[in-house]
Amino acid sequence: MINILRLVPVIFLSAAMVGCSPNAGNSIAESEQNEPVKPVPISSNPTQAIVDKVINGYGGVAFAELETFTIKSDLRYGWLGQGQYADYTDLEPMRKLYHFDLKKGWGSEEAWGGGGSYAERIFTTDEGQYTVNFLNKTWELDEEADLYQHFGGEIRTLDVLLAYDLMKHRETAEMKGSMMFRGVRHDLVTYDMPGTSVDPEVWINSESGHISKMRRPIPDYAVISYVFGNHTSADGITYADDFELYFDDKLIEYAKSVKLNVGGVIDSIWQVNGAIQPKPETNTSEEMVVDHISGPVYYAGQGAGWGAFVDAGDYIIGIGAYGNISERFAAFQTSQDIKKPLRYLVATHHHSDHLEGVPQALELGAKIIAPEMARSNLEEAIDRPLGAKEFLFLTENTESFGPVKLYLISTGHAPEYLLPYVESERIIIDEDHYGAQIADRASWVSTNMMTLISEVQRLGLQPEYLINTHGRKVEKWSDIMSMAEQHIPGLCPTGREICRDLIK
Image (cartoon, rainbow, N blue to C red; front, side, top):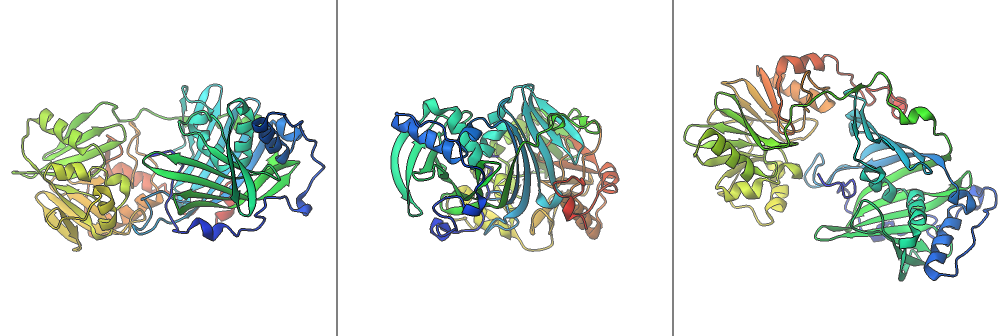
């Protein structure tokens, strides 16, 4: 999945529609002013003078000497091509709580979202990057990761951090001219931001020194624009309370509110709570492998990209349209000495990351079976109109293809979802509802998985096993149901402060 920005196509608005936001000049309202700013001296070098203006715009000496602060953000956020519906992506509530120690170069981000299905904290210290999963109650450490591996994306969406990063790397700054934006002249400056090959183009208000906009043109992908406004001040430090993120001309994320406080960073922020355990070993492989699961069911993949192949006698049925299907199918044929053609590929739902293998499957001569809702995203995946003989869109509740039964159901993950079930082996093949990766026990059961369980029970299926296209493990259905009994419903299953007010 692309981490160029934390994407989310969503509401299709033009940039002009947001150009009339309040405080367009980016000056701080008089009522928000704190003590007078003690400015830093202005350099005689024109480019460095702009950087000094930014420093003074964000608090002067107080900003230059800033050590620790916290930020609370209430966002509306989604994923590009992976919303509830194919024609648009929902902007779902997302909350974030940041802690930064700028002098040490440490950062912490706790995030809540997905209606309670996402609860994670990532923090970076000199030891590396810690990832804490509050739902699975596990943590892991990446000793090779630095601050920018995760927080590069966060720096780009928080103007106060972007201003600090520009100050920190000011020796690489280059002047790129000027431009009018929201009726005010802006100086355009680029600099060498670590962790990315695409340097940001920062638009700096020539009057106030505030950052109003930042652009990153990603070659052969999109122009990513970050827009900041309604600058306010807390404890002498300026920050933008408004934020919008655009993918070309589409609004894909925005902040409902941002709140900064200087200080508030305690030592325990940089520690893992004792109730959280190290992440257990996982059943996965970074090398391409093929597993014979049972009877006609085989599983092939590597890393987080897997798919099933079911031997239907004269032909093969593929399940899961994740990318690299040609490589998976070749590995399956070679390892099992099976030369039968791939006749069908089941694309279970409309999300774009689960359609990346469709062009390769068509080259292999397969017909794509998908729910009707996937039609528009399939056209995008192959970049041409859909051929009538190449695609089969299921509208019936149940259809059989050899040993595979496909049930058209509706879950919390996708309103139209094809559930593959191999009745002879009592195996369900799942995409995205369940993360079967922990080697010695079942994983936490999400709200989305609970909706899948409900549909399985409604259909009267009696599965014994589940395999998931994001992991190698074969999970016992009985173990999943045991974890389902421990499921905590509601928007805040962790009970953490970030979402505690949502508990009814």
